[in-house]
Structure formats: C-alpha cells, structure tokens
Image 1 (cartoon, rainbow, N blue to C red):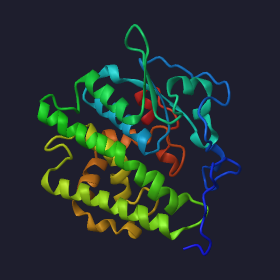
Image 2: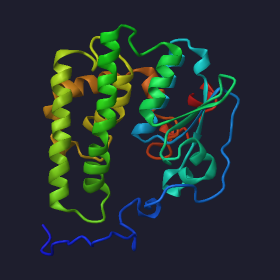
Image 3: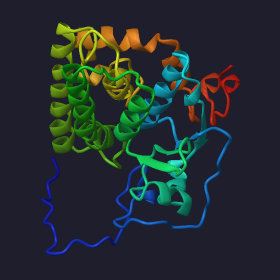
Image 4: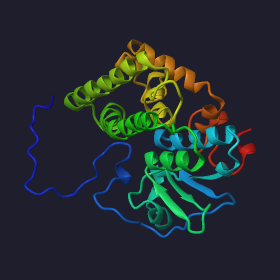
Length: 279
C-alpha cells in the first residue's frame, strides 16, 4: 500500500496521461479525432473489429452461423487497430459513437442498420438468423440472463482485474486485491452454474456461451492476462470442462483468428473477406 494517501481534487481535470499500455488513447471526451471513412466490402454484413474478447464473440457467432448453412451470414471483417486510435476515425464513430469495437453494419435491408455493443450484435444476428437463441420463452430468458450477466460482469474482469494486474503502470495492492476477489467470485458463479448444466442456458449451446467464452473461457485456459496460476483457475473444474469443449468447435477455432494481429503468425488473420481467408 502507498505511504501517501491520494486526496481527490474538488474538480477533476485531465492534466496528464493516466499511464499504462493504453494511455495514449484514453481521454475524457467522445467524438472523432480524425477524418477516416470506413471501407465497405461485398457482403451484407460489414464488421469493424479486432480480436479482443469482445471482438471474438462476433466472429465466432458469424462462423457458427456459416457452419449451420446460413449463407446470408457471409461477412467482411475489417481490422480496427484500437492501440492506434482507429476507433476514433469519423467513419467508425458514425457507426459507434462510443468508439469501442466491435461495430457492425447490416446492409441486408433497404436501409443499412448500425449495430454496436457486442451483446447487441449477438442478439441482432441470433434473431435475424433464428439460431443460438431458443425460441421458447424460458430458454430465451435464460440465454438473455447470461448474455447480460456477461455484459455487466466483464468490465470488472477486464477494466478492473485485467487493467490493474496486467496493464497498470505500477502494481497496487488495493485494486488488485479488490478486483481479484470479484474475478474469482464471477468464476465461482459460472462454476456453480456449469456444475448443473452443460451450457450456461441449459442443454443447448447459445449466444450466452459465445459471449462468455472469450472472456472467462480464455481466462481459465491461460490465454487472457497470463493470470491462470494467480487466480488458481484449476479450482473451477466445470468452467474448465466447458471452456475446453467450446475451444474445440471448428467455428470457434476459425472465429478467434479473425482480426488477430498478435501471437502465433499462423493464427493471425488480420482481415477476413471470404471463407478461404481462414485456410
């Protein structure tokens, strides 16, 4: 713990970068910083993203839909390099005023439809194609319960635990302890649920699993923040079973490669415009 207590000013002002890996793109205002139109490919679905956990959700769902034979789910995936500020270009801000990936434009109707926030995109696509979202009211409600659980919980894992454990300019005990406790509580929530059912919404693989897996599944598999040992992820046996089973799905293997520009070069597919781009 620091020997010097921080006293917040009466009115906070952005006078210096916050530090850390993403300091150069953090700012207290919204809006575009530069003029940059977005490219548009030949398919009705145009995705602008990067293979962060939130981006992987959408590419996995699109690949799952294609695997089911939904040819209308063919898509162009354009790379948005968030570390370089692409999300603040005018074209991207027009699609998502919140300047976060992923963002989708659906050109399948007479009027293009913008869809932003990963959960909204998953729901839009599941409803449009009638897949990975149960039609019965109870199954639909349970799927949406877990979809929105993820949308509310993951900021504590990413912006909380992940930031202070992996990206903050210095290690601080209080925030790491606070968010580690919450990350482990969330893993316990999932572990208890997955002890009862094979998938989060029950017996069927749904957009709930597709939303949760890139965060918590990849966390327990050691692919997020390199924090598996620190969090003692081996304790969450049911989450590990679920995570490893989903990781073996061919559409998941394909989807996690799209818009990836780091790690094993063989796993990197910066942009995807046709199925052959994935080999």
